[in-house]
Image (cartoon, rainbow, N blue to C red):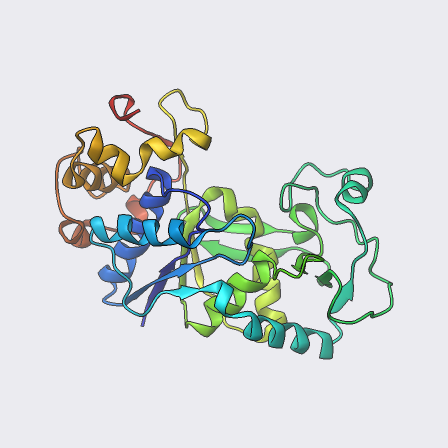
Length: 299
């Protein structure tokens, strides 16, 4: 059975790009008569706020997108992530990292980013084990990995180019994104991951971590991003493109859904509808891989 999920971080309001991803994931699961789950990825304590997560759930519900199981908050799952780290350590796949942010900026030269930094160059790979209270990285196997994307088709990526050995546990005591997302997808039985094309480069890294933990590989679909009317990133202006702000500006929920459905290839033109009206028209071969821009009248 298909199990999809939508897993935002509660660091701000869901904008139209986030909502489009949520709708695509929901539609894919519903079209396959499967399950759809919501997970709040709030492991980054200083940036995540409970009230923002609750607001995100309300916005999803306003569109008719409600989780088929109780919502999971990652901040409540530390023991599960710790157990995964212990499994990786027993298999000889973890090593401590003493590099600072400045060290990484000086050491690496490739142009892709990991958590806002460059790919990790492996400086601490030979460092002796120092316990679980240190920053910890996964020792990745060398070489590229091939995988199939439901939107982009056949892909081949080398994790060394994009992330290097990924950080799984931070020196401030927080479990890192890659560990939490892979462990929870496995624990929740997720078979399909739908997200924005900006996360496509980390897919191979996450698949390697799935392999290291003995977890199945879900299917992936990476959608083209939603941009501002001028083609720029939504960025900090995204708050003006959330459900509540749009409704306050006179844009009704059926209009939002109609535009989102049109942008996913479900409608010939934007027209008011309900989420359930789009299910039968959803197909991955209709989902555009390119950028779509927000209506100028909505900004």
